[in-house]
Amino acid sequence: MNKQKTKQCVVITIVMTVLALCCLFSPLINPWIARVFCEQFKMVSKENLLVHFISVGQGDAIAVNLPDGKVMLIDTGPEESNVTYTNYLKENVLNTATDNEIDYLVLTHADMDHVGGTLRLLQNFKINRLFIPKISSNKPSYQEILNFIDKNYEYEYIEEEIVLKNNGYKITMFEGFDYDKTNQSSQVIKLEYKSKSFLFTGDIDDDAELAYIEEYGDKLNVDVLKVAHHGASTSTSEEFLSTVTPDYAVISVGAGNIYNHPTDETLRKLEKVDTEILRTDEKGNIMFVVGDDLGLNVLTGRFMITNLTFDYRYLILVIDAVLFIQLIVIILKKDKTKKRISKSLE
Image 1 (cartoon, rainbow, N blue to C red):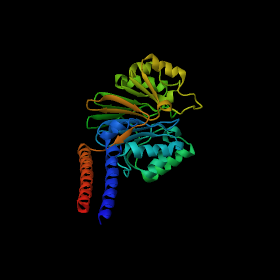
Image 2 (image 1 turned 135 degrees about the vertical axis):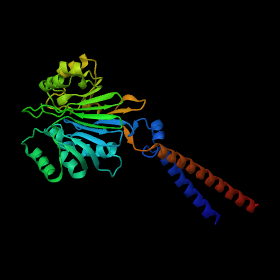
Image 3 (image 1 turned 90 degrees about the vertical axis):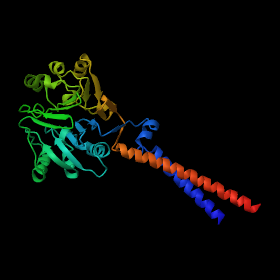
Image 4 (image 1 turned 30 degrees about the vertical axis):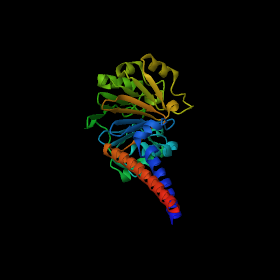
């Protein structure tokens, strides 16, 4: 009987030790400990504004966690990056593993390196509000997307300026300009929160940039610029940069692409205005964080997003403490049992 109790104590001790270590060291359970012990992960909370530039190769895919809990997507990347794109959304953007709700989806223009992931997204996620480009494309792949949208979704063209506001943030979808080419007609979007701002420019070229300068002027001045057309020489004019004056320039681009993006000419222009250049082909995923007393922070490479609330973190900490207390109690009981066995033998 004593031997059986001893075995039970050993088994329970091992189990409790494993549970305690899991609670302590698992980044998914205890973000405080993860910050200290898991330096390969940089963790942030969705209570802040998070702007994700997802590394999808030669294409654009941007996701935004808004501070009111809503999610906004701008473009969906090329079709060949579908799995990478949707996995990133599930792991780092959506609120839970089973959440499939997107509040806003904006497609800047009809090129497949920007909308190639749209069909898979529409088939697997719920889109509450969908904005599509006015200038279409006769490519079969894009027509397939349009046919699916027509059958299953209500959608909006941005025919006049649209402003979305809540919890201190402001999203402005500029009315834009109609050109014959889809790139020039790309939708341009500005995001503002806590005195920090972002400008997403699709694939507009220097002619469209000049038109935006004339129409909107200083409204284009931001902290972070999504460089148009993956850093092509036909975009990012000196006049545009002198108006925007970004502290950071993000280039979404594929490694070793056949277009030689970004071009040396564009890189020189960005360096000339003393802008920090961040490229997805070099950095991988790029995320900006804006929150109370945070200013503007940028994370690249590997990072982890946590949805844990302040109270829930305290609950995890209490569970950790209880587990350790139980371990100590088990060990003490085991020692008392041994002492009783020794006395009885005497």
